Image (cartoon, rainbow, N blue to C red):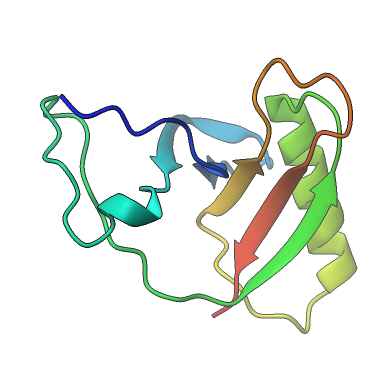
Length: 117
């Protein structure tokens, strides 16, 4: 019953298949606004869970435009290529992040994050 408004980034956990495409399962995460962090309201929908994320170190790349799945897959491949074989990071998932509301036509920011192991 509490309206919290939208926060950024909207983070989608992507699970890549062997060929680099994304599996059909995804996890969408939203940041709880600061004023609700200490005592977040209890979700009324059972499919919504509150999780506390621990600190992490990430490898990241940024791009603009209205991001589609193919964009995230392509930028994840570019980030993987740029990192080469020396960097160690989680290969079973990565984060696709969008920072802008849908009605913002220019200067959009999107990122792909790999979590360092």
